[in-house]
Length: 351
Ligand SMILES: [Zn+2]
Image 1 (tube, rainbow, N blue to C red):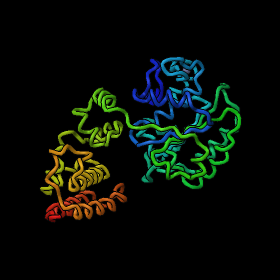
Image 2: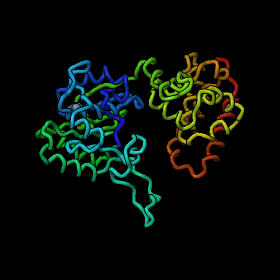
Image 3: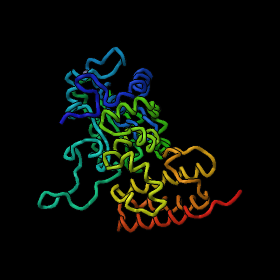
Image 4: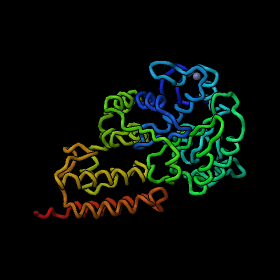
């Protein structure tokens, strides 16, 4: 399978808005380890992949992005087909499908006798075994002689043991070895990991670039979902694919105020809770006279009692911690919506 998360044979970037950040990173990279950091949902993984592909490319471009992978040489072809001998990717198993990676490329979940996946959930951590394999990779000579590159995504998924095992190689990689770590929560990394990497910022794309991309992906009224996702186009696309539409988003505040749990039951539970959290954030903001962040003002009910909204926010925060494995999704949502609806009825005290 040809990867869609690197520079293609046509020389196109996987995400058009990465061009400026890549130009900057490729021209300013002085360290053997880069740390791409910024908000999630804007292309950190693609950015890390393209940096790796570019360092491995045998005939990198000179313009418009100097040093960018050409997409056509033998090395780029190996990268596109995910068979480059000088490349290693460390990601948690739980992310492989979401990133468009074939399950059988990594540690696949345990299979039972009939070849079906067992009940054990794929891990959300990058474990010591993966780092050990990377360390053996670090020992061998580069097969094609240009570089050897390791991408770690998301870097905060390294558990403590794995992170410590990575440290020494990160400090003295030796030979042609280079690293790209990517993280939307760099404060969660060991300070010793952070200090060994050159930071590469990747911020939100412009609204125009994000909207053009979402439209090309078939998202209707993309401006609504882009705002719902705080300007993060990849998250907006994911939500759209999960069944969140502009219409369902705009109707959500009023339907919840009427205690209509059905407004949320078609969405995955973590998404439903996130949606309520964003609604609460906007209700708290408008109660304090600030503009809403995620909903258009006209979709929101009149300002609510801010203390009551804080109480709902707390309930949602607690629920979000267990949202991946609720015992009974409908009961949980009914309870959260019911409590929210009661709290929305608390009168606004005159100040
Ligand atoms: Zn190339």
